[in-house]
Image (tube, rainbow, N blue to C red; front, side, top):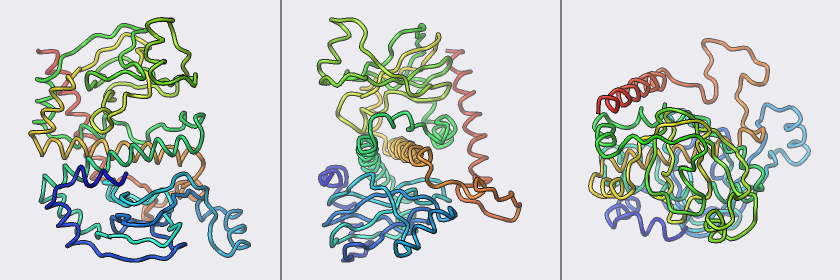
Length: 365
C-alpha cells in the first residue's frame, strides 16, 4: 500500500499534508487509536508497522476481569497488519463515528498526524484534494477489508453485511445534478430471474443501481485460480457458489473496478425479476476524471460503505456492542454510542425522496 498515496495524491496535496501534519516517533506498544473512542486525527504511517485488533467492549464484566488479571489492558484479536504508507483514522464517517478497532504500534514507528478538524476544513474547501484523498481511502479500505476477511477465514465473509442501507447513504450524499447525470448516462435494463449480472473473476462492464427486485451475492467455494473459475462457467456449466447476502432496491453493484484493478470476487445473480440502472463503465470513468466534485462525492460514498462493511464484520463477531444492548434502559438525556443524529435522519429522508424522483424520471424516459 506504500504506493497508493504517491499515485493518488498530487504534489500540492502532499505539500499541504506535510505543512498541516505533525511528525511523531512512537515506541513499540503505543496505542494510536483505541476501539470505542473518538478519532482525533488522520495518521499516515511513514515507517514501522501497526497492528489492527478488535476487543470486547469495556462494559463486559468478564472482559474487565481478565483485563485486570493481565495488567489492565483489554486483550484483542489481531485482524490485520499495516505497513508504511497506510492511513488510519481517515474514515469520512458520520460525525459521531467511534473507532471500531484498536491500532497499536508493533515496532518503533514514525507517523504524520493531521488533526481531524484541520482535515475536515481542507476537504470542504479543496474539492480536488477531497477527490484524491477519498479515492486513496477507498483503495486502502478495500484492501484492508480483503485482508481482514482472509485473516478471519473465508467462512466469515457471510458476516460482511453492511450496517447502513446503501440507498440511504448514497442518495443522501450525492447532489441532484449527480443523480440527473446518472439517469442520462445510464439505461434501465430488465434482468430476468436466474440471470447473472456480474460474474466473479470477469470484468464488470457497468455500475448498476438496483431499481426493483432482488439480487444475491455469492462467492465460489472451489479453490481454483480466478482465470480457471472465469472460464469454467463457459466450458463446464455451473460453478459451486455460496450465497452470503441479498441486495434490494437502491443497492449498488459493480463499483469496485473504480478503486480496484482486479476483477470482482463475487457473483451477482437475480433471484427474482429485477430492473437495474446500468451506467457504462467508460462513461462513469470519464465523469470521475473530468468532474472533481462528482468524484469527491462518489469516492467518499465508496469509502464510507467499505468502512461500514468492516464495521459490520466486527459487530457480528460480538465486538463493540451498543451501550443500550447491555441491558441499560434508554434515557432521553443520554447519548449512546453510534446513535443517529437528527441531521442524519433528515439526510435519510432526503435520500428516499431523491431515489423516488429517480424512479419517476426513468419511467418518464
